[in-house]
Length: 122
Image 1 (cartoon, rainbow, N blue to C red):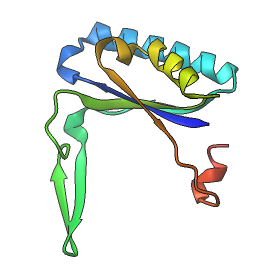
Image 2 (image 1 turned 135 degrees about the vertical axis):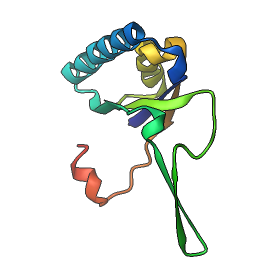
Image 3 (image 1 turned 180 degrees about the vertical axis):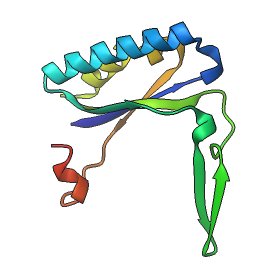
Image 4 (image 1 turned 120 degrees about the vertical axis):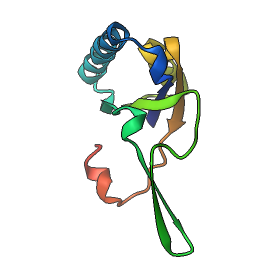
């Protein structure tokens, strides 16, 4: 089953050395998952200051700089994995540096047949 691991952390609490260490640890986990055929996709996100939010209300598109909600932790990256079950996804999430200083949310991916992206993630 496919799982999305959403990594949340407070950007202001990470120093440059912290980020470098996080990227190295995350890269190591990614290579390990790829070698096991478990990695579908992963990427860090640019800082929250680069975010743009789009809403459509009453037929009007509203574009706002920044995130939709003010929160202590921001979405900083993701891993999409192929895991046998939730327990395996939890084990992978526990290896991510984001789990040590933030939160990793695990969500099963709803697979809808015949979506164009389907061929990209198999």
